[in-house]
Image 1: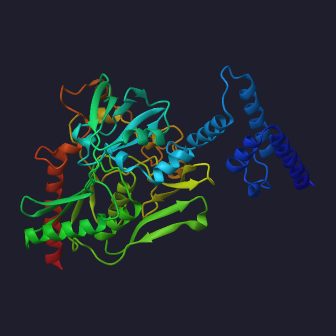
Image 2: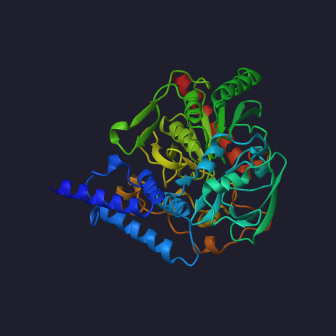
Image 3: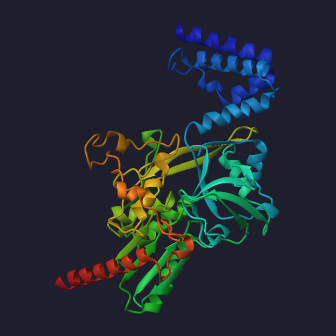
Amino acid sequence: MVADFDSVRARAFWRAILMRNWVVATALVAFLAPASALPQAKSGKGGVYDQLNLFGEAFERIRQDAVEPVGDGKLIETAISGMLTGLDPHAAYMSEPEYKALQNPKTDESASTGLVVTMENGQLKVVSPRDGSPAASADIKPGDIVFTIDKEPTYDLTLTEIEQKLRGPDGSEVALMLRRGTGAPIEVKVKRAAAKLPSVSARLEAGDIGYVRLAGFDEQTAATLSDAVKSVRQQAGNKLMGFIIDLRNNPGGNFDGAVAAADAFIEKGEIAVVKSRKTENTKRIAATPGDVANGLPIVAIVNGGTAREAELVAGALQDNKRAVLLGTKTYGESGIETILPLNGNGAIRLTTARYQTPSGRAIQGKGLQPDLTVSPLKLEKVAQADRRREADLRGALKNPETERGSAGKPGGPGAPDKAPSKDATTATPPKGDQPTVASGDIGTTSDEQLSQAMDVLRGLAIVNGRSASAR
């Protein structure tokens, strides 16, 4: 009887809406309550039908009483956008024109600044600029806050709108007003470029160390990585003692490309565990035989700009004990986003799954701790007091491991980071010193983390050599 009564209420509700406005009914049916979802059990106070009645009442109040008239379509799109942005910082609604523009970008407006950004409490924040991009050349760094794009405030824009504004004709210029740390806002002008950004570069360091820079991931990353490693091995001859894999300021990219990059260095074991809402859909990604480094020791360098798929690679190397992680804690984001079309009414970008390390460590909202913490500057801890990560974003997906693990135990997995000392929070870096690493400084002679990684790698090579001779 309850189900029948609910069905009657539902039919009456939709009939009333249809009589008021056909556009409203169509939008609500398409976006909020598909027919297949109507018979579902009640949830919360009053059930889903009372909540839909509440939405309908609010909708009518706005239509009738708002000081400025608002079109029905605009109200529906705003409602959907608000519903999505309330889920997590990356969920978003795309109108039909925006969705079509994403599918078929205009050739004369496909140039990019190379910035990878996210929204944090209404502010636009830089995750990292891609290597070789105009943004990297303009010295934009991870953690920078962008206030305006061509003098238009970013707080009132969706992430999709922001990404579109950052793109444009090749050679065109975009003006960004940004702030770094507690400094005064500055204006930076960046020229867009259509050139393909490199994801892999490699060289022989000090005659016996292979340095491989992974700046991002695309469909060609695995093949490029294999060729780069082979080239370094040929240059070194029999003198190569190991590899340094540099993942700093790597904002991620193509998921399959990242999996293939991790697989290239792992002979056997698992690369990642992908979990969606349904536990039966959990997927474990296994490595395939083969190791381009032929078992030589590896040190992987990470920092707060190591995000998303780059964290997948770092976690796989660490859990399989294939590499020593050196640097600072990673960004902490592992969501897999899916674009879902809405029957000619645009699309939604929704986080539908997230990945963990092979041992089951959650990355989301937590990041990866390196085996060896090495800061690029002595004042790095000052920056970390101001620097926020994925866990700090409004509506960020929670890390169940943090919530249930060692709650309230000092130093346990669920314990918060220690508060910085008074000296650390009051200290200010000297002029010209920056607590984050610029992409242009990575791999240079002044790169302190790289120098430390080389020392660690030499130590590992000595230990491995002794172990081999002992056997």
